[in-house]
Image (cartoon, rainbow, N blue to C red; front, side, top):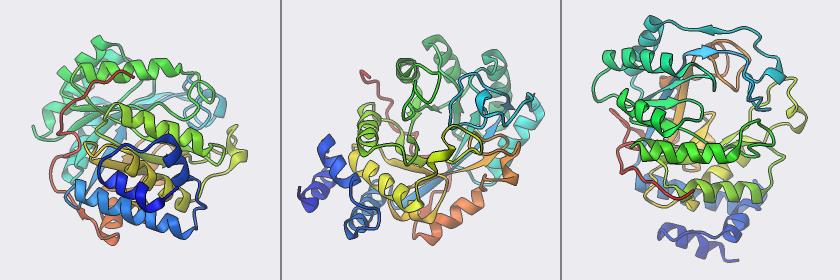
Length: 338
């Protein structure tokens, strides 16, 4: 295959085929061609977002052992990291949201474990929304939902949701892949923008699996796509596989950008790193509270970064950082057959 031709095709907003994605993914991560792929992704990503990256921030409402038993998640009961349940109060939730708003996050994500009581989530969300600026973008990161519940999220003041069909969903998790897809449809039908990601990528995942997930995320025109590597949870069933390098992650981030329609302006990676930004990632997350990739109850004391840290990484990678509400959630809501 012709690398230059594939890159030109992506820049012309023509869809790459599975075979073309495989060609880009199969280069060794230290190959000269990968640097070319990253550079072209970076140029395209900057062009689509006006050279401005975004820093979104997430905080958790609770921590609890979760029966979804995702093998990559610290909340999973089978990983035995957390054996107790706790929830933050309404006041603490408001304080966290206000702090992240003050710190300049372009969007604020409110996360729960999959089985957090939905009624309580709506109540606490209403309190959060009342205390934030009207223009502040509020995003939900919750479990699968019915269309009725998706509408309620919209009514509660959420502009969007984060929802992903994870790699090997239904094999490395107890979640039905069809249910994940159905929830994405419900969110979009309710008027919520859906951000997603190719995740969590580990050494065990083939280029074919990654290419298929890139094509899936492209199929429903999300607010953003991107890619994130799996962080090893000590003692988990996936620990023996190890982790992919940041360089391999940067390659996948770049290929994901090239595989997305230009209507998808955002290209995320997690965890934040300068290599990801150089490869075309224009979205990082800061985090507070519980974190499914961390074994500490408060990720501020562990893996979680701050808004200021994420901004600095972008600036060191020659990105400007958006001031004000996220533009990735400002576009049209699309509903596709998925």
